[in-house]
Figure 1 (tube, helix red, strand yellow):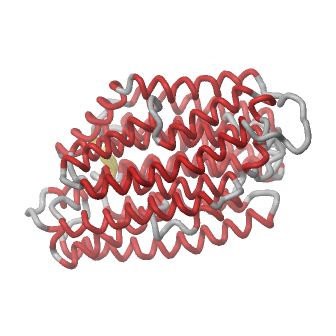
Figure 2 (cartoon, helix red, strand yellow; figure 1 turned 60 degrees about the vertical axis):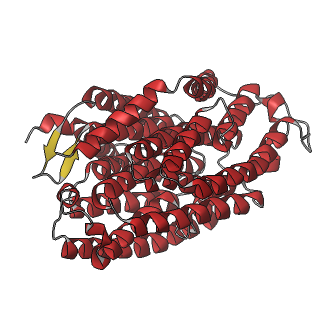
Length: 475
């Protein structure tokens, strides 16, 4: 076994181990630990970048390393590094939990990297569980226990139920194949997914992934968890967790779900329900994190449009959508975290006058929300365009029409947030918001990136296409 292809996983395991040793041997030092985390996170991004193009297998084919998995590992490493930039001042975290916080972040990222490479059914389940349990604890460590503990318990209860459903589905898949590798299932005779037992197993397996992606009706945990978690943890769940979920859903459907018309129909229904419920529920939200949580459910519906196309362009559109979500969601949570500097939850009305207090934060928020709404020329418009075109190629015109109606609905609540930041006068006049130079640079880079990637998406589109081609080409 070539251990060099496991360099990203080894680096994140070593980083988690380093913070574990610090927790036993050193007193908490917020500045030192934050700088160390940024250094280790940046090193992880560099290693993942260098590792793109590596191919091979780990642990007797349990994990498949290819361009598809390496692209998503790069996205996961970027997600972690960006979230770490927000962790300099975590006033809503007790000092004694600071080491544990970094350990869990690196362990969770490691688990998600294993998850996007998993080809064996048990490897898939164990990686998913390791990432989930890390997130359960991260949600619950918030200093304000009125929010954190309750959110962590709800997240745990719903997650364990989804895991049980998924485990039973994996057992049914094995019984019907019989095979324990997704790549072996892809080589099975055509129509395997049409067998009742295999179809039920595949559907229950996807149920566990629907939970991670917050697809209706597995989305009930999202608003309470986003609201109850620390702002930094909510940002991590909204970015890294969703990127990993998209990767696994594409891999499972592409390798095990080919040829199932019934699966396409069910995914279409779930897509419509996720878009509609997510957008309608978001309209009534006053808490900004709850609004973004329901927005996540709506975007899960858009991602499903690309996946249910069950063709190369649809899968590539879903991969590109994951890239876009990472950029847009993090930009929104950057503003939430900086504006709510004391770690408290942010109401939409708290954004009043933001364009005067911090023009760069207001601009970044506006561009990210326009991207989430799919307004050109942002990356969000390109992502929606790709999945819609892929679905129309397969004849899903009614589904695309419903999706476009939902896009119009989503404009309403996104514009309400922009209105609060630019047009609403604050109740009490406050001075300029103190924003560090590094944060202003990061916010400006994110806003520029969302627009530039919308104007010139060719490189990211080609990268997504190449990753999907490698996935579909088989071992």
